[in-house]
Length: 372
Image (tube, rainbow, N blue to C red; front, top):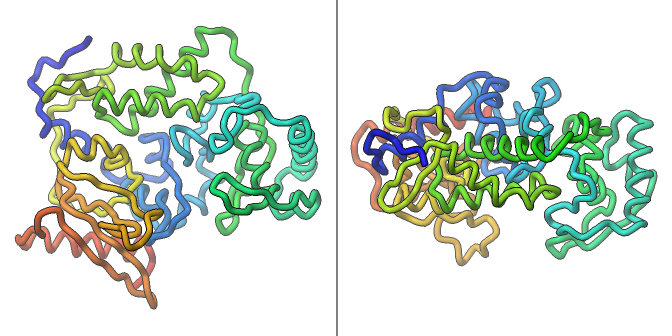
C-alpha cells in the first residue's frame, strides 16, 4: 500500500476535498473535461441540481445553459453511479449493456413481448432520425403502467427510458426538459477479459476523480454503485476495488484509510474566504458518511420526507464557508424575487466578512437565475 511521506490530517483532507472539486471556474466544456460527470435531478429549488453544480465551476453560468448547449458539448445523458451527464469517453466505457434491466426494474430478463415492442420502437426512431416520446406514444398507443414508485406513468416513456439504459437509444437533446431520442451506435465489442478489466478500472478512476478523497467505506460503496454503470460486469467490481486500493494514493487518518488519485497532493491546498450554497448532489457533500466525518453533523435530503418531519427544509442547500459546512439555506423565487432562509449548526458567524460573502453568494445566485 502506497503511503504518503507527509503526516496528513483530517484538516488537510477537508481542505483538499473542497479545493480540488471547487476549482477556478472555466468553460462549460472545460468543466466536463475536468470532472467528467454531473449528477442530474429534476427538482427546481431554485434550479435543477445539474445547474446548481455547474454554476460553481463554469464562468458566468446561467440556469439552463447545459440543456441549451447540450448538443454541442460532446456529452451524453446516462446512468453512471447515479443518473446524469457525462463525457462521451466515460459513457463509451459502459456499453453495450446487452439484456440489462434498468435499475428500478431489477435484473430480470425482458419478456418476449417487451423485446418485440422495443424492436418496433427502435425501427420507428431509426426511420425518423430522432423522436419525441409524444410521437412514439401517438404511433404505438402503449397506454399506462404502474411505475416503480406505485403511481401511473406512460408505458412509452418507461420503454424509451429502458431502451436508453440498455444503450439502444441516446438522448440527442431536451425540449422543455423532455428527452429527444435517436438510435445509439456503439463502438466495437470488447476483445477479451483484459480489456473488460481495464474498462472497469477506468470507470473506478473516473468515479474517484469526481468524489475524492474517500474513506475506505465510501470508496467501497462508490465502486459497488458501478453496478448501475456496468450491470453486465458487476461480478468484476470486488476485484476492481482491491486493484484501486493498490494504485490510489492513500493515508491512514484518525483510524480510517483514505484514498484519492495518485497524481494529486492532498497536503498543499488552500480555500478562499468564500460562501457557497451547494446542491445536496454536489460532489463536495454527496457522500453523507464523508460529510459527517468532515463537518461533524448529519445532513439529510428531505424533499421526500413529509413536511412535519423535516428538520432542515424541502431542499436545504448545504452552506459552505471556507472549508466548513456550517449550516444550510432554503431558497425560493416568488414574484420574481429571491427569498432565503438559513439555519446554522451552531450559530451564524458574526464577523462582517461572512455577512459580505453571504450577500455576494446571493447576488451570484440572482445572476444565475436571471432575476432582479
